[in-house]
Image (tube, rainbow, N blue to C red; front, side, top):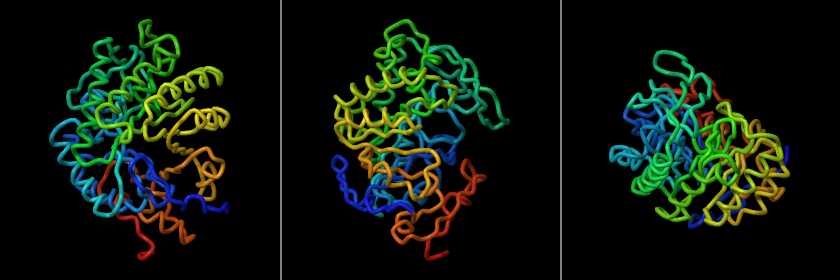
Length: 359
């Protein structure tokens, strides 16, 4: 097994002092209340994992249009703020720090899953043609409504308001979700964005809304509280961003523009183009978080050791092991994830994974 020594060195992220280089990766759990407030067990779930230091929450919609899946939380009403306050208080009591991930699903949605049951919105009126779970079974995502320029500005305002609401709820910051097939990522992908105005066509135009959202959020709550996630070339949600040269050009431009805002971190969901990752690292002035699909225990520290990352977020390891930090320190065995309990349900597979003392 590769040494994990590098993950135990302290790190300062903006105004936050972290004891190590691990974090909780954002993971949808679909256990929110129907009104979008965090579920009754959410505070317990996140507090259990507070030893990870930096906790990035599940995707949280900034508006009614932003919801994609069933029972995902929101952060745009007073009730949402009050619900998240219980979570942030619980995490802070255990010594952790919480960033709420702001996720607008865009075309990766179905009217059955949203409060208003309206047609989803997107850069262009092109369906993702993906299966979506609804309360009455799986359905194909419909053709979305193309956002007007004025409505794009409304979306920017929704992110700004959601960021302010997150801080009001006690969050230490937010992560803007510009990855994994959702709205901001859709603007970056030519097969989803066929606009001919200032938000489509060139790499500069396709990146425009992402930069505008990041600037608005940083202005609202401070760059030291604003992170952003990208996933170059990820085909999730039916997206195709072109060949390797096109992807590199798009993301080198985007990250170069975002770097000017001095955001607290860049979170890269990495598919494997290490040449691109290295160039993004060189261009980025603050912290880098890197996560890879299928990374095994022995590879957790690899990107840190290679100088490509400062922090290694954990997904399934943290989902199944609330005490994953203690287990990794001790070289102890890890619980395995129960796939049947990842999305939806109650306490089972959510807050009842055993800790070492119970094993």
